[in-house]
Image (cartoon, rainbow over all chains, first blue to last red; front, side):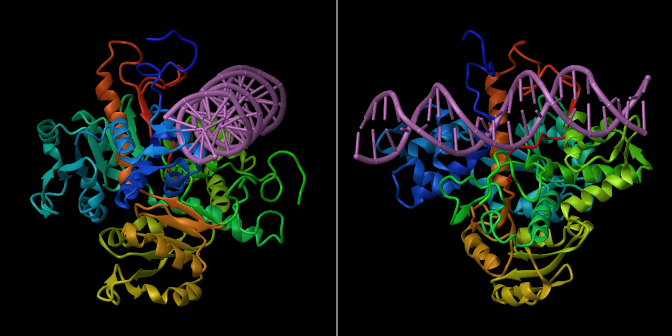
Length: 256
Length: 256
DNA sequence: CGATGTGAACCTATTCACAGCG
DNA sequence: CGCTGTGAATAGGTTCACATCG
């Protein structure tokens, strides 16, 4: 316990801001890559470069998990991997139900990234009787009506929706009724869920439209002789790496 | 070479914040839905409900595009659709190149959401000679080496990367060399691009890990008798719709 | 000495609350 | 009178710059 004033969140002051949480998986991937390349230790500068962020942000992010660096040296790669994995809850394996075995569902079912870190597709579900019973990537497709039993049996708490938009809300409701409290939604539809359920969305069409905006911007401004940097989107601060290549994407719009 | 203290962006003060841009496609979808349902006009409250945001945010977002509402009435649906479409640059059709025709590439090539609003897959590309020449969803697969010619021919400015992580950076470099200035990256790899090129990423594995964090949180806190709301993620403000269902996802982590 | 960890400054985004218009 | 549009207040995130420590 602690007294009061600012930011009383979960247990103590654990907090970990959402923006930081969204970057931890990126750091984790960067760390694995550095480990593969033989680094036992990594400075915030090196790690930040691989992760595509600046070093100050990385240090501040890591500081939310505790103090796992050594001044004058950097971070122990293996230890940081452990710490981030623990924070993200990746020390256990999560069972996932994937609903909607169409075009996209097939691709997702075959996606290697699933198994790679602590996620297991425990069930594939569809409403189409013709698809039920099929084997997709070695996993049999079950009927959506069997969701409650399957969810209970496997202790499924994460659901992935890959159905058409029209079916998404109903599927979502069924997932929630079956005890799922985290949903990843690929359907182009805004889901409505009770409090306590987290939803994240992945939406190709939205991403394209955002890119369209920026393309449109670039095109319509023409190449303004030299109002700003010759190519930048305009908001680069004159700070450090204003030139050369921008690495990665800065995070922002996805979900929460 | 310009003075001016605060926030001088593109032309004048056009700005349109990134967070707003990321939501415009959502509003657009909501508007289309309301139009389909016969609404000629919509209040900020109604629209916001369909789009899964609160009305104040929606009004402020729309105010960045100008004043298109009527006080006491609401917004004219058709007019708003036009205005948002124009802002997003959707009044023209963008040609897109999709690179990497594997599992995911197939699914993306078949995705209806592409054609739906101003995007046309002008080319499918792969490095595997066995795939070249195949027809996928009616479009022939070309070899990646032909990218420069194809990009020039179709005026392609948007590229989608659906290759394995190992190939992503090279493909990215080739796209940029061919004149592509906006990239949507599905590969689990942080891309490095020159200034002036926009990158957005879609990453299943990162999304799952973020959900894992929240699941972990919920599980480890148990059900705290009544420290907070019985189910919420903890950061619900005591404001308006704190109970009932949270609609949609709040935006945050995706890209920029 | 070199790199972490962090207070402070800054900037962006969200929410409130209400003036003002149709 | 109802709803938009917006200034002001608040919250959240990023960057700077440096004290601090191994």
